[in-house]
Length: 338
Image 1 (cartoon, rainbow, N blue to C red):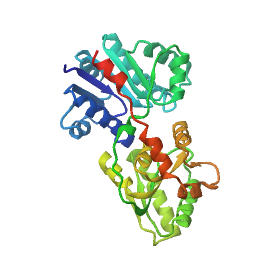
Image 2: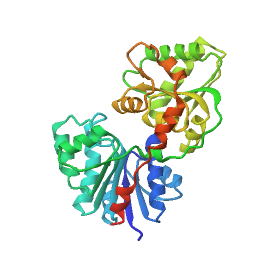
Image 3: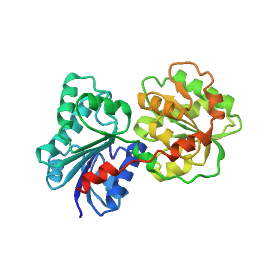
Image 4: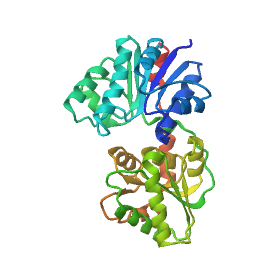
């Protein structure tokens, strides 16, 4: 039976990870020809990306209320929407959208989210109170699962939806891919040290530098390229931006090494059998690196043996772990088919 869904998330900002999650979710719902409306910061971009699917602007609250009122379900997620590390306003916004759906007596699915950190007491109270009334909750990490459990809220622990992406293993080129984003501790000193290490460790390889969200990543990517060129003018470098999800995955799957900050960039590297080194700026990256036992650079610490560990990485072991890490749709399917 065809049902109507409204999707709420960090959509339309052209951030690779969130857009890739949205693609997974839309493709899943399209399998049964469900009707979809996406809340997006760029409705035209989102509508065009998904073949004229209906999309409404993030801050047109009346339009959002109207769309939810005509729907059967609201899906909130994935990613890390319910946290106040970005801002309390962001947390309140996503909670408000969920509250609208509950007020209108719609079923609410919290989809593969990372919950927290939520440091503001009011934010904690509102999140706890609202999530207790949702129909089905799935979270992508044990810390989120345990937080909800401590609040008396049942949730299903799942992996990140991007792990359901099937990436064909490709022949590797002598390329080092680097994915950077802006962050308060991504200083000129860090970029210079990273450039120096890349030039030292990979003197005969090309360097591809990836911006996943230009408003946050691109400036840092260009700074790294300039730093590499200062050290070795003959090094072949390319900065990539405004790539589609498919282009990002296709490019990264062909490289020999990946050095990445963003959580979903690291997942793409792991899925593609690329030797991968993480840059630790967030607890989710640290947990992912620990789970797959890959090396991790710390922004404010000296580099030690991380590049040696990168070169010696056991891809066979990682692929064995990847092969059993399938996204579990069972709870989601039961909820929407009920």
